[in-house]
Length: 142
Image 1: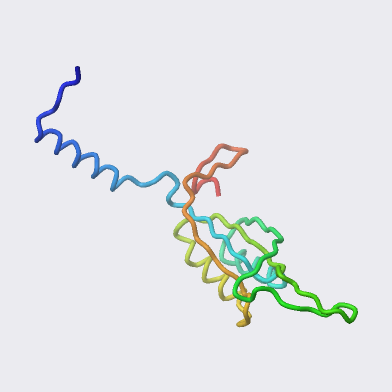
Image 2: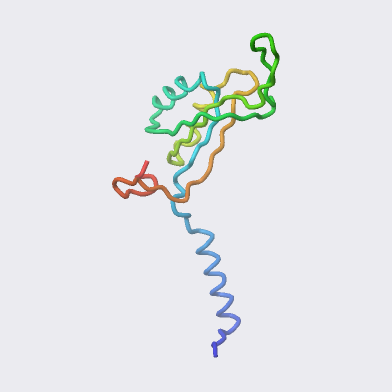
């Protein structure tokens, strides 16, 4: 049979548990993942700008997609056809939280053409990062 704590003790325990959960920093919370989609011809310019501000690595993927532009039409050998998915480049960059705003600003300024389809940027919290070779974790793994 389980012993029941007096109501005053239960309230103290609940308050302490809530306080610990509210103030506990999530594991890896000091690392952000920035996912950006940009126009392909802007890749080298963006890479150089990010290297200049201290970004040490990124993953690059060629993708196709559409947003508000919903594709476009092109003419090839006299025939018009619809291009529903537009070629884009996806960048994935893991950085410390303190650098995240600077990285977003740099990508925004460098990738902007002022025309539709310039891209999007998403910033996510990383719960854990591990460098496979050394076992370093979180900010040290970057």
